[in-house]
Length: 245
Image (cartoon, rainbow, N blue to C red; front, side, top):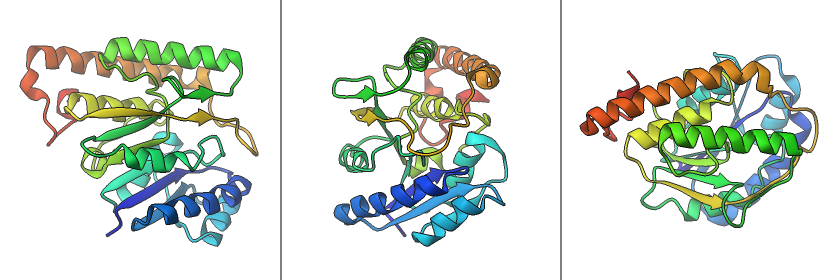
């Protein structure tokens, strides 16, 4: 069984995968850990499928659409003790994989953060402001100290994500995983990284389209926090989603 599974959601990302996957392979070789690389996409995405197979990655087709559906499919496919997720567009530097791996001991979730000392984000100002606002709101509602809860570059312990139901179909899914870690009593750490613009293509993200899902997610997080306040014993690693039910 691999020690590490790298899950890369990708949609129309063939040219970017041709650059990313060799760089990821180089970093993984340096870590000298048993690993697998899984690219998650939809059927018919020929460019992404061809690039993934050309570089030796496993291709997994998602059953549920959207980023949340891709995460769920990747988590279901992953066999590693640790599961790393990263974007396919070149915005997540593969070198940060080594930093996440080095910080894993005693943690259930390690997040690559743009917003702690040493981190940075090269993005349009309006998008940066929106990201900081979303993180601040989720931090206040969830009660956690994580500065960059929206980062998709993360290392998860398998016991945190195995069988974890992902309800959101959008990028709000990353907050679902963070909330599950928080209410489940897992240690969450952040390491700094430098976020860069995508290399090829365009983003599929849309703040307007995703807004309703973010609001629903906030409601679930607020309800879970209320339940935990009334019954702290509900925080248990064996079932991190218990307070959400």
